[in-house]
Length: 412
Image 1 (cartoon, rainbow, N blue to C red):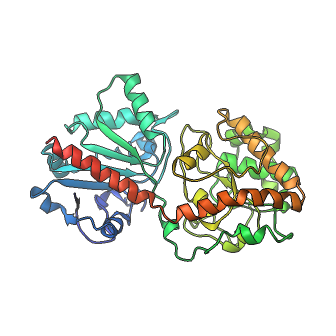
Image 2: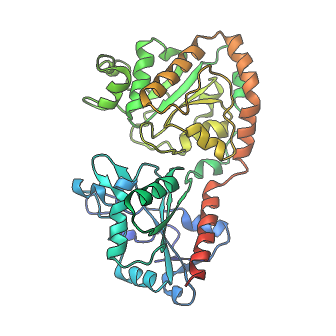
Image 3: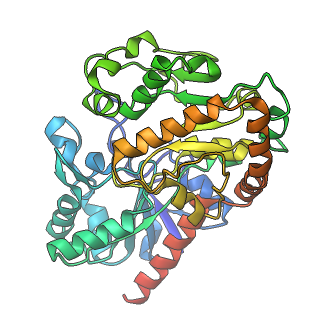
């Protein structure tokens, strides 16, 4: 299966004119896409678009942001139009002739397609596809939520609309897996034999309500010095979701405890592909405050894969079903460090409280008790450490995309 690009230049994405505007260098399509390097490492053909007259293939469009951005819902707030309406006429013509199948790579984010304030992203791109005259199933969407296929099926059933797209889960966070400076053995193995090890680490760069509430709650409880805790970005003004989690009066104290830094100010620089092994080697547990907490989505990011790759047990402050999502990828989550299960709690407030209570109980344990529990958890940590090194979820997603395209073109 051929992949076609406007240019085969390594660093230039398809529809590069949509990646920037006069005001911003982050717009509809993603600059510096990794798809070409990935395809070449898979020994898949990368060709210029002019060659698609000879053989049909895939036209891969790497988009930025959550669905509310690239489906055009944010256009009311000076965001872009939807990616399908933005397609050049020559691309639409080739899709209609079934010389191309579009693949929308939207897997860097995992938010929902239906936004409470902005509207229905599924409907927006559905209508756009019909208006542009695209054939059914000529668009394949790769997105970062493990629930995306279910959400699309539910939407089709609810609305009665005909199926225009094929959608699939993809995990885009392969860069952290490719880092050759990763340790050769789990870092917890040393940490759990040093009594000076801190009880936990919790790294929070970008402001999210659950992160601010988490750090503030620990601060009010006098527990921040029991771990290594960062909170680089502070939001000015009220945050209703953070107030919902810990109460308005408590959240009003958040500036007493933030910002917090450990190894530098990461409030501007994206730390997604960076890690400090000393931090993990001197703590006994990682608290993963994932990107998504409130929404019905399972979005597994580098925040989870760092402790896995570095060999650390973890607890997640994340959306419902996050641990189940990890298990579906072959990882183990049976650390048995905590008394109360939390992953499948539907109510965000109860889930937040249970995670915080588990963490506080963990902090309160003496070192020997922590050590005993970590010895029990170690086989699961070791399994995850080894399993992650044999996987490439992004390549798996590309392989599935190719298989689907082959079936699509068989019907031409």
